[in-house]
Image (tube, rainbow, N blue to C red; front, side):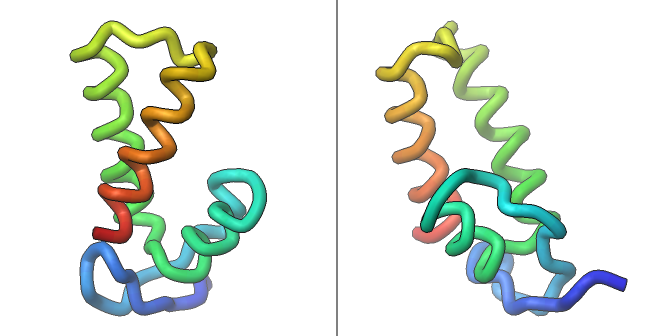
Length: 76
């Protein structure tokens, strides 16, 4: 059974991610504060951004943009 956490995005107790979704401190922060459901919502949003702006996911500029959007989407 998954551990429940209070998800800061969805404002309710939900199952925690079973893995670090992102490297470093940001990954730990996400795992401790963002539910698996909210993370799935971000993955959908990320795909939309990449497709809408026709971004190259391997580009450092794109990766920085997506990090900023991820933090905004999940924590603001």
